Length: 471
Ligand SMILES: *Cc1c(COP(=O)(O)O)cnc(C)c1O
Image (cartoon, rainbow, N blue to C red; front, side, top):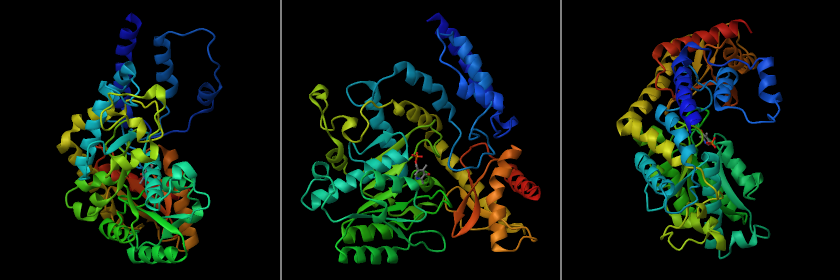
Protein backbone atom coordinates (compact mmCIF):
# COMPACT_ATOMS: atom_id res chain seq x y z
CA UNK A 1 0.00 0.00 0.00
CA UNK A 2 3.01 2.28 0.14
CA UNK A 3 2.68 3.07 -3.56
CA UNK A 4 -1.01 3.93 -3.05
CA UNK A 5 -0.25 6.31 -0.18
CA UNK A 6 2.30 8.23 -2.20
CA UNK A 7 0.18 8.27 -5.33
CA UNK A 8 -2.90 9.30 -3.34
CA UNK A 9 -1.10 12.34 -1.99
CA UNK A 10 0.12 13.21 -5.46
CA UNK A 11 -3.36 12.75 -6.92
CA UNK A 12 -4.75 15.18 -4.33
CA UNK A 13 -2.15 17.76 -5.42
CA UNK A 14 -3.01 17.31 -9.07
CA UNK A 15 -6.73 17.59 -8.32
CA UNK A 16 -6.29 20.79 -6.36
CA UNK A 17 -3.97 22.31 -8.98
CA UNK A 18 -6.46 21.47 -11.68
CA UNK A 19 -9.48 22.93 -9.90
CA UNK A 20 -7.63 25.98 -8.58
CA UNK A 21 -6.25 26.98 -11.96
CA UNK A 22 -9.36 26.45 -14.06
CA UNK A 23 -10.51 30.05 -14.31
CA UNK A 24 -7.08 31.14 -15.67
CA UNK A 25 -7.03 28.59 -18.47
CA UNK A 26 -9.06 28.58 -21.69
CA UNK A 27 -12.59 27.37 -21.06
CA UNK A 28 -12.10 24.88 -23.86
CA UNK A 29 -9.58 24.27 -26.63
CA UNK A 30 -9.52 21.76 -29.47
CA UNK A 31 -7.37 18.72 -28.76
CA UNK A 32 -4.17 19.21 -30.82
CA UNK A 33 -3.11 16.49 -33.25
CA UNK A 34 -0.22 15.03 -31.25
CA UNK A 35 -2.33 14.83 -28.11
CA UNK A 36 -5.16 13.26 -30.06
CA UNK A 37 -2.71 10.63 -31.26
CA UNK A 38 -1.72 9.96 -27.64
CA UNK A 39 -5.36 9.69 -26.57
CA UNK A 40 -6.56 7.48 -29.38
CA UNK A 41 -3.51 5.64 -30.71
CA UNK A 42 -1.69 4.13 -27.77
CA UNK A 43 -1.24 0.40 -27.33
CA UNK A 44 -1.94 -1.54 -24.18
CA UNK A 45 1.39 -1.67 -22.33
CA UNK A 46 2.89 -5.15 -22.39
CA UNK A 47 3.81 -4.85 -18.73
CA UNK A 48 2.22 -2.85 -15.94
CA UNK A 49 3.30 0.73 -15.29
CA UNK A 50 3.71 2.44 -11.88
CA UNK A 51 0.90 4.61 -10.45
CA UNK A 52 3.20 7.61 -10.38
CA UNK A 53 3.71 7.47 -14.14
CA UNK A 54 -0.02 7.13 -14.76
CA UNK A 55 -0.69 10.26 -12.75
CA UNK A 56 1.96 12.13 -14.72
CA UNK A 57 0.32 11.02 -17.94
CA UNK A 58 -3.13 12.09 -16.78
CA UNK A 59 -1.77 15.48 -15.75
CA UNK A 60 0.05 16.01 -19.05
CA UNK A 61 -2.34 14.52 -21.59
CA UNK A 62 -5.84 14.44 -20.08
CA UNK A 63 -6.46 17.34 -17.71
CA UNK A 64 -5.37 20.07 -20.17
CA UNK A 65 -8.19 19.14 -22.56
CA UNK A 66 -11.42 19.51 -20.59
CA UNK A 67 -14.96 19.72 -21.92
CA UNK A 68 -15.05 23.08 -20.17
CA UNK A 69 -17.79 22.64 -17.58
CA UNK A 70 -15.48 23.25 -14.62
CA UNK A 71 -14.94 26.85 -15.77
CA UNK A 72 -17.10 29.72 -14.46
CA UNK A 73 -17.64 30.93 -18.05
CA UNK A 74 -18.96 27.61 -19.33
CA UNK A 75 -22.59 28.23 -20.28
CA UNK A 76 -23.20 25.31 -22.65
CA UNK A 77 -25.90 22.62 -22.53
CA UNK A 78 -26.61 21.61 -18.89
CA UNK A 79 -23.27 20.62 -17.39
CA UNK A 80 -22.09 21.72 -13.97
CA UNK A 81 -18.69 21.96 -12.32
CA UNK A 82 -17.98 19.16 -9.84
CA UNK A 83 -18.64 19.88 -6.20
CA UNK A 84 -15.36 19.48 -4.19
CA UNK A 85 -16.97 17.08 -1.74
CA UNK A 86 -18.04 14.87 -4.61
CA UNK A 87 -14.56 15.06 -6.11
CA UNK A 88 -12.70 14.02 -3.01
CA UNK A 89 -15.08 11.23 -2.05
CA UNK A 90 -15.06 9.58 -5.50
CA UNK A 91 -11.82 7.75 -4.84
CA UNK A 92 -13.24 6.38 -1.59
CA UNK A 93 -16.19 5.06 -3.56
CA UNK A 94 -13.77 3.18 -5.76
CA UNK A 95 -11.77 1.92 -2.77
CA UNK A 96 -14.96 0.65 -1.17
CA UNK A 97 -16.34 -0.65 -4.47
CA UNK A 98 -19.61 -2.35 -3.57
CA UNK A 99 -22.38 -3.25 -5.92
CA UNK A 100 -25.45 -1.44 -4.69
CA UNK A 101 -27.87 -3.92 -6.21
CA UNK A 102 -29.01 -4.50 -2.66
CA UNK A 103 -28.07 -6.22 0.57
CA UNK A 104 -27.11 -5.22 4.07
CA UNK A 105 -24.08 -2.99 3.59
CA UNK A 106 -23.51 0.75 3.74
CA UNK A 107 -24.19 1.49 0.06
CA UNK A 108 -27.89 0.58 -0.30
CA UNK A 109 -28.72 2.03 3.12
CA UNK A 110 -27.12 5.36 2.28
CA UNK A 111 -28.88 5.37 -1.10
CA UNK A 112 -32.25 5.25 0.70
CA UNK A 113 -31.28 8.37 2.62
CA UNK A 114 -30.04 10.29 -0.40
CA UNK A 115 -33.19 9.51 -2.39
CA UNK A 116 -35.31 10.68 0.54
CA UNK A 117 -33.28 13.91 0.75
CA UNK A 118 -33.75 14.57 -2.95
CA UNK A 119 -37.51 14.00 -2.73
CA UNK A 120 -37.80 16.24 0.33
CA UNK A 121 -35.72 18.96 -1.29
CA UNK A 122 -38.08 19.31 -4.27
CA UNK A 123 -41.26 18.62 -2.28
CA UNK A 124 -42.07 15.26 -3.84
CA UNK A 125 -43.96 12.66 -1.75
CA UNK A 126 -41.65 9.96 -0.49
CA UNK A 127 -43.07 6.61 0.58
CA UNK A 128 -40.40 4.13 1.77
CA UNK A 129 -38.49 2.87 -1.27
CA UNK A 130 -39.90 5.61 -3.50
CA UNK A 131 -36.94 5.98 -5.84
CA UNK A 132 -33.46 4.98 -6.89
CA UNK A 133 -30.29 6.50 -8.26
CA UNK A 134 -29.45 5.92 -11.92
CA UNK A 135 -26.73 6.79 -14.42
CA UNK A 136 -28.66 9.92 -15.33
CA UNK A 137 -32.14 11.12 -16.20
CA UNK A 138 -32.16 9.17 -19.46
CA UNK A 139 -32.09 5.91 -17.51
CA UNK A 140 -34.49 7.33 -14.90
CA UNK A 141 -36.89 8.09 -17.76
CA UNK A 142 -36.66 4.53 -19.08
CA UNK A 143 -37.54 3.26 -15.60
CA UNK A 144 -40.46 5.67 -15.19
CA UNK A 145 -41.95 5.08 -18.64
CA UNK A 146 -41.51 1.30 -18.40
CA UNK A 147 -43.37 1.49 -15.11
CA UNK A 148 -46.11 3.57 -16.73
CA UNK A 149 -46.37 1.11 -19.61
CA UNK A 150 -46.77 -1.89 -17.33
CA UNK A 151 -49.32 -0.08 -15.16
CA UNK A 152 -51.40 0.75 -18.24
CA UNK A 153 -51.31 -2.87 -19.38
CA UNK A 154 -52.22 -4.20 -15.92
CA UNK A 155 -55.11 -1.72 -15.72
CA UNK A 156 -56.39 -3.13 -19.02
CA UNK A 157 -56.06 -6.70 -17.74
CA UNK A 158 -52.88 -7.86 -19.44
CA UNK A 159 -49.14 -8.04 -18.78
CA UNK A 160 -46.74 -6.19 -21.08
CA UNK A 161 -43.70 -7.97 -19.63
CA UNK A 162 -45.17 -11.36 -20.40
CA UNK A 163 -46.91 -10.67 -23.71
CA UNK A 164 -45.00 -7.82 -25.34
CA UNK A 165 -47.00 -5.12 -27.08
CA UNK A 166 -47.99 -6.93 -30.27
CA UNK A 167 -51.70 -7.08 -31.05
CA UNK A 168 -52.65 -4.43 -28.49
CA UNK A 169 -53.93 -0.93 -29.21
CA UNK A 170 -50.85 1.33 -29.56
CA UNK A 171 -49.95 3.18 -26.36
CA UNK A 172 -49.58 6.93 -26.81
CA UNK A 173 -47.19 9.30 -25.02
CA UNK A 174 -47.66 13.10 -24.95
CA UNK A 175 -44.74 15.55 -24.88
CA UNK A 176 -44.08 19.01 -26.29
CA UNK A 177 -41.46 19.80 -28.91
CA UNK A 178 -39.44 21.19 -26.00
CA UNK A 179 -39.50 17.77 -24.30
CA UNK A 180 -36.06 16.17 -23.95
CA UNK A 181 -34.84 13.64 -26.51
CA UNK A 182 -34.53 11.03 -23.74
CA UNK A 183 -38.34 10.79 -23.71
CA UNK A 184 -38.30 9.87 -27.39
CA UNK A 185 -35.45 7.42 -26.90
CA UNK A 186 -37.30 5.76 -24.03
CA UNK A 187 -40.48 5.51 -26.13
CA UNK A 188 -38.49 3.89 -28.94
CA UNK A 189 -36.69 1.53 -26.61
CA UNK A 190 -39.90 0.47 -24.88
CA UNK A 191 -41.68 -0.38 -28.13
CA UNK A 192 -44.07 2.56 -27.97
CA UNK A 193 -42.79 3.80 -31.33
CA UNK A 194 -42.06 7.39 -32.35
CA UNK A 195 -45.27 7.57 -34.33
CA UNK A 196 -47.15 7.16 -31.06
CA UNK A 197 -45.37 10.06 -29.38
CA UNK A 198 -47.59 13.14 -29.81
CA UNK A 199 -46.11 16.62 -29.99
CA UNK A 200 -48.38 18.85 -27.95
CA UNK A 201 -48.18 22.53 -29.01
CA UNK A 202 -46.63 25.14 -26.71
CA UNK A 203 -47.62 28.69 -25.80
CA UNK A 204 -45.49 31.80 -26.35
CA UNK A 205 -43.40 30.92 -23.29
CA UNK A 206 -42.73 27.38 -24.62
CA UNK A 207 -45.04 25.75 -22.06
CA UNK A 208 -47.42 22.93 -22.89
CA UNK A 209 -50.82 24.03 -24.23
CA UNK A 210 -53.02 21.98 -21.92
CA UNK A 211 -56.26 22.54 -23.89
CA UNK A 212 -54.49 21.06 -26.92
CA UNK A 213 -53.30 18.12 -24.79
CA UNK A 214 -56.87 17.39 -23.69
CA UNK A 215 -58.14 17.51 -27.28
CA UNK A 216 -55.33 15.23 -28.53
CA UNK A 217 -55.99 12.64 -25.84
CA UNK A 218 -59.72 12.66 -26.64
CA UNK A 219 -58.98 12.23 -30.37
CA UNK A 220 -56.64 9.31 -29.74
CA UNK A 221 -59.19 7.61 -27.49
CA UNK A 222 -61.87 8.06 -30.15
CA UNK A 223 -59.48 6.49 -32.67
CA UNK A 224 -59.11 3.39 -30.48
CA UNK A 225 -55.56 4.11 -29.28
CA UNK A 226 -54.39 3.81 -25.68
CA UNK A 227 -53.13 7.13 -24.27
CA UNK A 228 -50.97 6.03 -21.33
CA UNK A 229 -48.64 8.82 -20.25
CA UNK A 230 -48.07 12.56 -20.41
CA UNK A 231 -44.59 13.93 -19.72
CA UNK A 232 -44.32 17.50 -18.53
CA UNK A 233 -41.06 19.43 -18.20
CA UNK A 234 -39.87 21.12 -15.03
CA UNK A 235 -37.14 23.06 -16.83
CA UNK A 236 -36.52 22.50 -20.54
CA UNK A 237 -33.01 22.52 -21.95
CA UNK A 238 -33.80 25.13 -24.61
CA UNK A 239 -35.25 27.87 -22.44
CA UNK A 240 -35.70 26.51 -18.91
CA UNK A 241 -39.50 26.60 -19.33
CA UNK A 242 -41.63 24.84 -16.75
CA UNK A 243 -44.89 23.37 -18.07
CA UNK A 244 -48.19 24.12 -16.28
CA UNK A 245 -47.80 20.99 -14.19
CA UNK A 246 -50.95 21.39 -12.10
CA UNK A 247 -53.17 21.64 -15.18
CA UNK A 248 -51.39 18.69 -16.79
CA UNK A 249 -52.00 16.69 -13.61
CA UNK A 250 -55.73 17.48 -13.96
CA UNK A 251 -55.81 16.11 -17.50
CA UNK A 252 -53.82 13.04 -16.45
CA UNK A 253 -56.31 12.39 -13.64
CA UNK A 254 -59.28 12.95 -15.94
CA UNK A 255 -58.08 10.38 -18.50
CA UNK A 256 -56.23 7.98 -16.21
CA UNK A 257 -52.80 8.78 -17.68
CA UNK A 258 -49.50 8.33 -15.91
CA UNK A 259 -48.08 11.79 -15.17
CA UNK A 260 -44.31 11.93 -15.55
CA UNK A 261 -42.26 15.06 -14.90
CA UNK A 262 -38.84 15.58 -16.44
CA UNK A 263 -37.07 17.62 -13.80
CA UNK A 264 -33.61 16.38 -14.76
CA UNK A 265 -32.18 19.86 -14.92
CA UNK A 266 -34.85 22.10 -13.44
CA UNK A 267 -36.63 20.37 -10.55
CA UNK A 268 -34.21 22.00 -8.12
CA UNK A 269 -35.29 25.41 -9.43
CA UNK A 270 -38.29 25.14 -7.12
CA UNK A 271 -35.88 26.30 -4.37
CA UNK A 272 -35.27 29.71 -5.96
CA UNK A 273 -36.98 32.63 -4.23
CA UNK A 274 -40.43 33.11 -5.69
CA UNK A 275 -40.18 30.15 -8.07
CA UNK A 276 -42.46 27.70 -6.26
CA UNK A 277 -45.71 28.82 -7.99
CA UNK A 278 -44.23 27.82 -11.37
CA UNK A 279 -43.78 24.30 -10.04
CA UNK A 280 -47.26 23.85 -8.56
CA UNK A 281 -48.44 20.34 -9.41
CA UNK A 282 -44.97 18.77 -9.60
CA UNK A 283 -45.84 16.96 -6.37
CA UNK A 284 -48.84 15.37 -8.13
CA UNK A 285 -46.67 13.45 -10.60
CA UNK A 286 -46.57 9.67 -10.62
CA UNK A 287 -42.87 9.84 -11.39
CA UNK A 288 -40.19 12.52 -11.40
CA UNK A 289 -36.76 12.29 -13.02
CA UNK A 290 -34.08 14.57 -11.63
CA UNK A 291 -30.33 14.69 -12.02
CA UNK A 292 -28.00 15.27 -9.07
CA UNK A 293 -25.22 15.57 -11.69
CA UNK A 294 -26.82 18.73 -13.12
CA UNK A 295 -27.63 21.67 -10.84
CA UNK A 296 -26.37 20.06 -7.61
CA UNK A 297 -22.91 19.50 -9.09
CA UNK A 298 -22.54 15.86 -8.08
CA UNK A 299 -19.75 14.49 -10.29
CA UNK A 300 -21.13 12.70 -13.38
CA UNK A 301 -23.03 10.38 -13.37
CA UNK A 302 -25.93 10.43 -11.05
CA UNK A 303 -29.60 10.63 -11.91
CA UNK A 304 -32.63 9.79 -9.83
CA UNK A 305 -36.07 8.35 -10.50
CA UNK A 306 -38.66 9.22 -7.86
CA UNK A 307 -41.86 7.19 -7.76
CA UNK A 308 -45.12 7.92 -6.00
CA UNK A 309 -45.82 4.17 -5.82
CA UNK A 310 -42.57 2.19 -5.60
CA UNK A 311 -44.50 -1.08 -5.97
CA UNK A 312 -45.35 -0.04 -9.54
CA UNK A 313 -41.67 0.11 -10.52
CA UNK A 314 -41.04 -3.19 -8.79
CA UNK A 315 -43.89 -4.71 -10.79
CA UNK A 316 -42.22 -3.50 -13.98
CA UNK A 317 -38.71 -4.77 -13.22
CA UNK A 318 -38.45 -7.32 -10.43
CA UNK A 319 -36.90 -10.55 -11.65
CA UNK A 320 -34.97 -12.37 -8.97
CA UNK A 321 -33.07 -15.47 -10.08
CA UNK A 322 -32.46 -18.15 -7.48
CA UNK A 323 -28.82 -17.17 -7.01
CA UNK A 324 -29.90 -13.69 -5.90
CA UNK A 325 -32.73 -14.57 -3.53
CA UNK A 326 -32.13 -12.69 -0.27
CA UNK A 327 -34.40 -13.75 2.56
CA UNK A 328 -33.23 -10.80 4.62
CA UNK A 329 -34.04 -8.17 2.01
CA UNK A 330 -37.01 -6.78 3.94
CA UNK A 331 -40.24 -5.40 2.47
CA UNK A 332 -38.57 -3.25 -0.14
CA UNK A 333 -36.29 -5.92 -1.56
CA UNK A 334 -33.27 -4.90 -3.63
CA UNK A 335 -32.72 -1.79 -5.72
CA UNK A 336 -32.05 -4.06 -8.70
CA UNK A 337 -35.75 -5.01 -8.62
CA UNK A 338 -36.72 -1.43 -9.52
CA UNK A 339 -34.73 -0.95 -12.70
CA UNK A 340 -32.70 -2.68 -15.40
CA UNK A 341 -29.27 -2.45 -13.71
CA UNK A 342 -28.01 -5.43 -11.70
CA UNK A 343 -24.49 -4.47 -10.57
CA UNK A 344 -25.03 -0.87 -9.47
CA UNK A 345 -22.29 1.64 -8.57
CA UNK A 346 -22.26 3.41 -5.22
CA UNK A 347 -23.64 6.70 -6.54
CA UNK A 348 -25.04 7.59 -3.14
CA UNK A 349 -21.71 8.42 -1.50
CA UNK A 350 -20.80 11.33 -3.80
CA UNK A 351 -24.40 12.56 -3.68
CA UNK A 352 -24.51 12.35 0.11
CA UNK A 353 -21.16 14.16 0.32
CA UNK A 354 -22.20 16.93 -2.08
CA UNK A 355 -25.57 17.53 -0.44
CA UNK A 356 -24.08 17.44 3.06
CA UNK A 357 -21.25 19.79 2.10
CA UNK A 358 -23.70 22.34 0.71
CA UNK A 359 -26.51 21.78 3.20
CA UNK A 360 -30.02 22.93 2.44
CA UNK A 361 -29.02 26.58 2.69
CA UNK A 362 -26.01 26.11 0.40
CA UNK A 363 -28.13 24.37 -2.21
CA UNK A 364 -30.71 27.16 -2.07
CA UNK A 365 -27.91 29.75 -2.39
CA UNK A 366 -26.49 27.99 -5.44
CA UNK A 367 -29.90 27.81 -7.11
CA UNK A 368 -30.71 31.43 -6.27
CA UNK A 369 -27.38 32.75 -7.48
CA UNK A 370 -27.50 30.93 -10.80
CA UNK A 371 -31.18 31.83 -11.35
CA UNK A 372 -30.25 35.45 -10.68
CA UNK A 373 -27.46 35.28 -13.28
CA UNK A 374 -29.97 34.08 -15.90
CA UNK A 375 -32.36 36.93 -15.08
CA UNK A 376 -29.50 39.44 -15.07
CA UNK A 377 -28.30 38.26 -18.48
CA UNK A 378 -31.88 38.66 -19.74
CA UNK A 379 -31.81 42.29 -18.51
CA UNK A 380 -28.47 42.97 -20.19
CA UNK A 381 -29.80 41.41 -23.39
CA UNK A 382 -32.90 43.60 -23.29
CA UNK A 383 -30.86 46.75 -22.59
CA UNK A 384 -28.55 46.07 -25.54
CA UNK A 385 -29.75 47.03 -29.00
CA UNK A 386 -27.84 44.22 -30.69
CA UNK A 387 -29.40 41.36 -28.69
CA UNK A 388 -32.92 39.98 -28.42
CA UNK A 389 -34.45 37.98 -25.57
CA UNK A 390 -36.35 34.96 -26.96
CA UNK A 391 -38.10 33.63 -23.90
CA UNK A 392 -38.92 34.58 -20.32
CA UNK A 393 -36.46 33.26 -17.71
CA UNK A 394 -37.94 30.79 -15.20
CA UNK A 395 -34.94 28.74 -14.09
CA UNK A 396 -31.23 29.41 -14.80
CA UNK A 397 -31.29 29.41 -18.61
CA UNK A 398 -31.44 32.49 -20.83
CA UNK A 399 -32.50 32.02 -24.46
CA UNK A 400 -31.59 34.93 -26.71
CA UNK A 401 -29.95 35.87 -29.97
CA UNK A 402 -27.54 38.29 -31.49
CA UNK A 403 -29.24 40.72 -33.86
CA UNK A 404 -26.80 43.43 -34.92
CA UNK A 405 -28.45 46.18 -36.97
CA UNK A 406 -26.89 45.29 -40.31
CA UNK A 407 -28.21 41.75 -40.53
CA UNK A 408 -31.96 42.02 -40.96
CA UNK A 409 -33.17 39.04 -42.97
CA UNK A 410 -34.54 36.15 -40.94
CA UNK A 411 -32.34 33.69 -42.82
CA UNK A 412 -29.23 35.82 -42.25
CA UNK A 413 -29.94 36.12 -38.53
CA UNK A 414 -30.46 32.39 -38.34
CA UNK A 415 -27.16 31.72 -40.11
CA UNK A 416 -25.34 34.21 -37.88
CA UNK A 417 -26.67 32.72 -34.66
CA UNK A 418 -26.03 29.21 -35.89
CA UNK A 419 -22.36 30.07 -36.45
CA UNK A 420 -21.80 31.98 -33.21
CA UNK A 421 -21.51 29.18 -30.63
CA UNK A 422 -18.55 27.40 -32.26
CA UNK A 423 -16.86 30.73 -32.99
CA UNK A 424 -17.21 31.75 -29.34
CA UNK A 425 -16.02 28.35 -28.14
CA UNK A 426 -12.89 28.55 -30.29
CA UNK A 427 -11.89 31.88 -28.78
CA UNK A 428 -11.61 30.06 -25.44
CA UNK A 429 -12.94 32.86 -23.21
CA UNK A 430 -16.49 31.60 -22.83
CA UNK A 431 -18.50 28.60 -23.92
CA UNK A 432 -22.10 28.64 -25.01
CA UNK A 433 -24.25 26.48 -27.22
CA UNK A 434 -27.11 27.13 -29.59
CA UNK A 435 -30.49 25.66 -30.34
CA UNK A 436 -33.65 26.08 -32.40
CA UNK A 437 -36.41 27.80 -30.51
CA UNK A 438 -39.78 28.64 -32.05
CA UNK A 439 -38.40 28.00 -35.53
CA UNK A 440 -35.42 30.34 -35.09
CA UNK A 441 -31.74 29.74 -34.44
CA UNK A 442 -31.04 30.83 -30.90
CA UNK A 443 -28.26 31.12 -28.36
CA UNK A 444 -28.76 29.82 -24.88
CA UNK A 445 -26.73 30.23 -21.73
CA UNK A 446 -27.19 27.87 -18.80
CA UNK A 447 -25.90 28.91 -15.37
CA UNK A 448 -24.85 26.24 -12.88
CA UNK A 449 -21.45 27.41 -11.62
CA UNK A 450 -21.34 28.94 -8.12
CA UNK A 451 -18.39 31.17 -9.05
CA UNK A 452 -19.86 32.82 -12.15
CA UNK A 453 -20.13 36.59 -11.66
CA UNK A 454 -21.98 39.47 -13.27
CA UNK A 455 -18.72 40.45 -15.01
CA UNK A 456 -18.70 37.05 -16.69
CA UNK A 457 -22.06 37.92 -18.27
CA UNK A 458 -20.57 41.05 -19.87
CA UNK A 459 -17.61 39.02 -21.09
CA UNK A 460 -20.05 36.58 -22.68
CA UNK A 461 -21.92 39.27 -24.59
CA UNK A 462 -18.65 40.87 -25.73
CA UNK A 463 -17.28 37.50 -26.81
CA UNK A 464 -20.40 36.95 -28.90
CA UNK A 465 -19.98 40.38 -30.53
CA UNK A 466 -16.30 39.76 -31.26
CA UNK A 467 -16.88 36.27 -32.56
CA UNK A 468 -19.73 37.50 -34.79
CA UNK A 469 -17.61 40.32 -36.21
CA UNK A 470 -14.98 37.87 -37.39
CA UNK A 471 -17.36 35.41 -38.98
C1 LIG B 1 -29.84 16.21 -18.98
C2 LIG B 1 -31.30 16.14 -19.21
C3 LIG B 1 -31.93 14.93 -19.51
C4 LIG B 1 -31.15 13.65 -19.73
O1 LIG B 1 -30.49 13.27 -18.60
P1 LIG B 1 -29.05 12.53 -18.62
O2 LIG B 1 -28.60 12.69 -17.23
O3 LIG B 1 -28.23 13.27 -19.63
O4 LIG B 1 -29.29 11.13 -19.01
C5 LIG B 1 -33.28 14.92 -19.65
N1 LIG B 1 -34.01 16.04 -19.52
C6 LIG B 1 -33.45 17.24 -19.24
C7 LIG B 1 -34.31 18.44 -19.12
C8 LIG B 1 -32.07 17.32 -19.09
O5 LIG B 1 -31.50 18.51 -18.80
